[in-house]
Length: 168
Image (cartoon, rainbow, N blue to C red):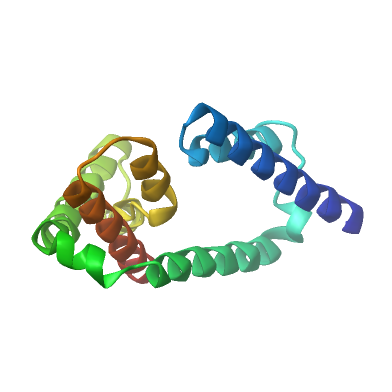
């Protein structure tokens, strides 16, 4: 058990560092390589990381819960007031109207495409509302955008990330 956990953690670090390095050289958002690395190391790929690696469902739930808390609150602490002021109207529209449209649209789509209950469809919708600064920021940094647009996207990503974590 301990050997598998050590191997998994080592593999995650190596794949993460490699993904970050490759993304930097190719000027592609690093999240693309993290997703590929996750598939490669997970049960779909090599099976280095699995449910049993972290001690079953309870252990994995603890690890994921801690990771989500760190990611959400790290993004919240990165929120700068000058960026909010720069695009407050656009950000407010994205965080309110945009989030509601995304939530309801996703829930309706999930319900009718998969036949899932409405409650679960709305949980899935609330999870997918989160654009998240960990995804948005690297994308914003890798493309050329007007300052107003990048401020609005970063603010929306941070606020919706926290809101979605609470809603889900």
